[in-house]
Length: 79
Image 1 (cartoon, rainbow, N blue to C red):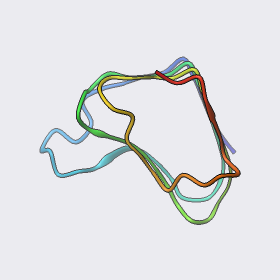
Image 2 (tube, rainbow, N blue to C red):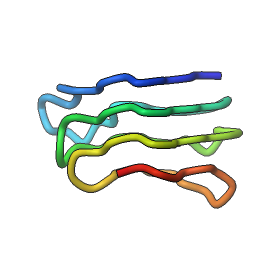
Image 3 (cartoon, helix red, strand yellow):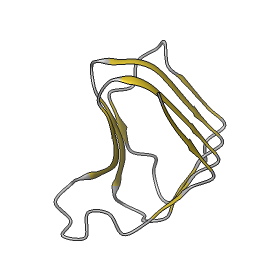
Image 4 (cartoon, rainbow, N blue to C red):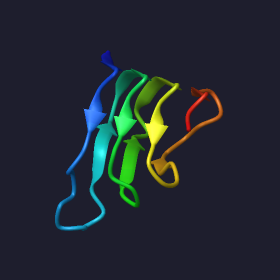
């Protein structure tokens, strides 16, 4: 399981190649109260092996860009 709480993510993908700040390729991901500070970048890539994902009360600059969202994941209260 991977847990991120009140983290600040910035300056990933400096070459603008489309890289994600977080790649959740399996297991469990919980992210609460985190700040993705770079607008226009890809935020989170959820792989097909992810078992459970909870994203709650995170701040995304610009549009939230998350790949691989499924209906059984809990994604709420993000801005």
